[in-house]
Amino acid sequence: MKQIQASEAKAKLSELLDDVERGETVVITRHGKPIAKLVPDEDARKERIKRAIEGILELRKRTKPVSLEEIIAWKNEGRR
Figure 1 (tube, one colour):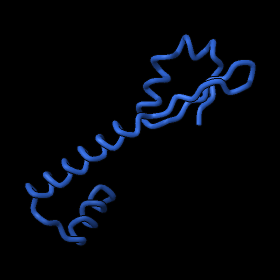
Figure 2 (figure 1 turned 45 degrees about the horizontal axis):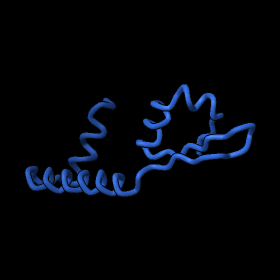
Figure 3 (figure 1 turned 135 degrees about the vertical axis):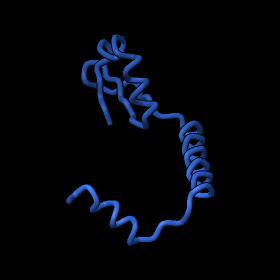
Figure 4 (figure 1 turned 120 degrees about the horizontal axis):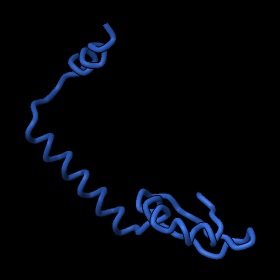
């Protein structure tokens, strides 16, 4: 959890909102005491997760199955 002074938060609001959008919680303080908390929107987070899962499932429909041996070979390919 990130903490920031109110005066600094005012100057960096856009950056703080970016942090919150990425899932971080930001506590705004005044004279060292918490006065506000910016938290991610849970509904938006759930919607992003749902879209990501749908995208993965759709991708899996369009690709052929891969064996464990193939995955290991790909991993080791760059190590030669």
